[in-house]
Length: 155
Image 1 (cartoon, rainbow, N blue to C red):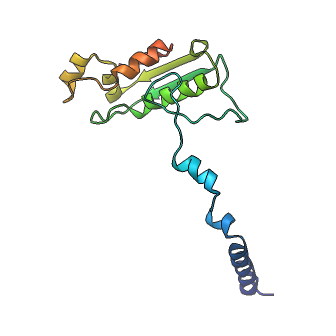
Image 2: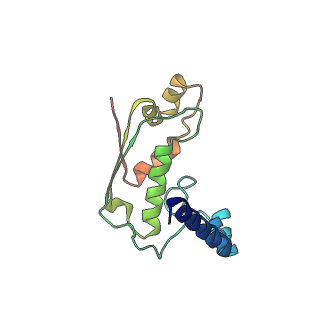
């Protein structure tokens, strides 16, 4: 057989499979699964209002006490409320808290670089360097440090 015929057989076989099993090919899901992904219920077990999580108590890998976590936060658009890196830190802490891990058992550090260093400023200082009078990350920074996160400013 020549290659064109083999390719045609392969392609027509794949098309037949696509029409026989549309849910696998086109990604249809059950209504229960759609409900979970369309309207998840976020929880904030430790850090409030930022870093919401969906509990996964049956996940194969669970957060473990004594973990060492380090995040470098480099950029920040000061028009936005909270840098993505700080949101990620809150999310990680909420995952650990949801799994019953005491946050003080963690070695968690953040290093702020470049434009992100301003999020560590007081409201007064933040207002001098930006057009925003109150540091929108101030409350989150306080929550993170209360949870034992060490925050360093590179410079």
